[in-house]
Image (cartoon, rainbow, N blue to C red; front, side):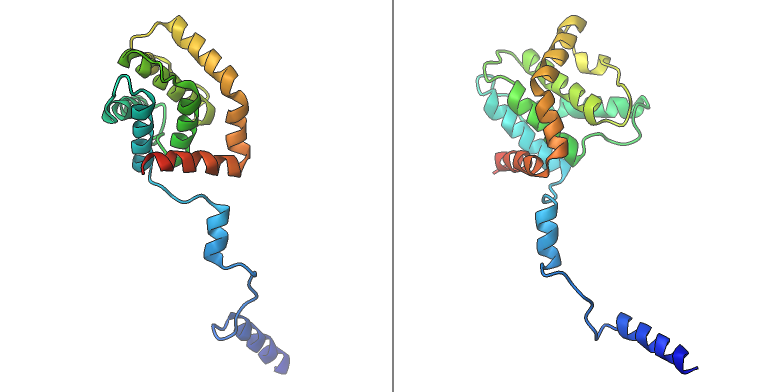
Length: 187
């Protein structure tokens, strides 16, 4: 009976709020800040991406709304068509898309159609690279451009960005740097 009480009392002491448990030297909020990037809602990230495109393509002076509509329309189309079970525009996918756009969309773009073709090609690559399906139909991403030009852009963009696409998935620090750049666009 004595041994039984000792076990119970030991258990109570361990679970008691009066007795502090062993803790690491770092404060939990600080540990979580250094381990995970700060949360920024997808809508805010999309707004920052729109501001980036507006700045990058200053000759066109595109509204920040149009590129976001193009992306949301495709996302909705694929959701309704059953290619995905939830929206693809998540915080991580927007950061990945921004990385592609930052390095691939030229400031020398002359038309909204060219901007749309480049952006939607980057979006298709994002879908194919981090999406949950094995493949997505290219038709919603074409938007008037020819199949040949679309596939040539896909191959070219993938060859240019393959090392960075791997790096953003394997290196947290690189992801944080890209996220910080995207976040800075909104300031």
